[in-house]
Image (tube, rainbow, N blue to C red; front, side):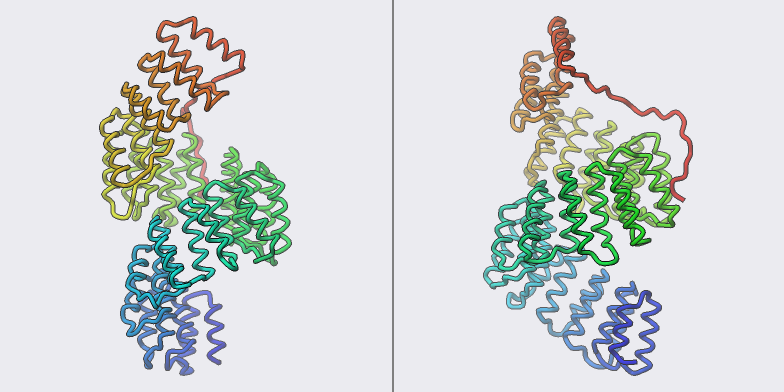
Length: 593
């Protein structure tokens, strides 16, 4: 058997056992006496089939001839692709003389394995003359992951100085500026590219979509198709479909559906198919979504787990909880194994209604049994479910057992304690989070901890935390954060300060909190002025006139209260009444088996 035939078989082999059999065949024929393309293919096959990194390293070191640079580079890249970062770095450190390709492999390998800080350390250690488009684009991606806008600008300057006008460098810069919400600069970089590749088009479309400009994403897609500059790939199509879903443009979505069918091969792409289902769900056409799901799943079979996740999420988002659970049961009947994403979709259903907590606990047991509970996505969903259902002890257990926590994990547990009256514990958890290396609080965390302080009456603590987060961590207060600050102060009766905070970022949240404080402390004049300002933001609102009438009634101004309620009746304002779930009896049903 020729060396080229064995290389072809290695690329096609499915299991580690097959790779070992081909290794034995190559050794028997004396084809592994030196570092050759076959030995590189064998090492890549071992890494791709999840062999221990020691196996790949032994294979590399056991070959008698000294390895040429291309063999070192191939081995380092293969180890990084298999997420064996420590082994890849040990091989990189052993390398007697590194080439620009070696440096690029180390920078890109770290960046792709979510180690942006290490990627930048390697990049800084590299000589400027060794900089290639591949290493520079990987460094830009690492700086983007660290939200380091200044470093992105410096890398942009280096690219200009070295004359690296490469499509991949340009695409990385478009993504970097788009991720930092600088859409004009992202568009400028894109327009300055002589021949933007499909990655650049997709990056700019994705940036528009992430920053809440889906109509611009669709316009860019039309420009791409009409100019015929490059053909859209699966990522471009999925982004365009997501933009249609965001603007709920069913007609444009149907046209895209036809475009997808015309250009695809025999087997549909699972991500494009998922985007199609999601588009129909969000456009309110659940029947069409179900029809697309049936057709696409028949073609994809057991590879279509993302389709199940999308249709379940679509039913849940459309308020059809019964159909969502029906899809979960149908998934089991079709012998399709739920994955971490499935659980992340299902668990919020259990949090939405108290009587589904038992089903959520069943899902938790299923996750433990299948080894999915250690996934951060599943852990965060479990945290959210238990916190929303008031099961703080279960939430704490899940949190403590998580092998890895991110910002979402910490924010969820802080928010859960704040919602359920454990303000001191929420603040204590925030202090732990702030001391955790590699995790920075964000605006959502800020709102969660301020709200916790507001519900617990910890006014000075809350003010101190806001000062710390803005001055030490550099956070910018959003409208939601201003609303939380107004609520914190208004609950404590510090209405003058609350009014000053509301004036900084007036909106429904801030002014509504101020009006509630006016009711608690009987501030009629301030309440009237606040209600007038609220009317500009919510002209058809029912909550604030009701609150103002309560202020009048509670302060003996009955005539004004009756007059306001009469005016509300004439305008057909009916306040939506609150409700609570009360669990009386729960019929047991097994949703996971």
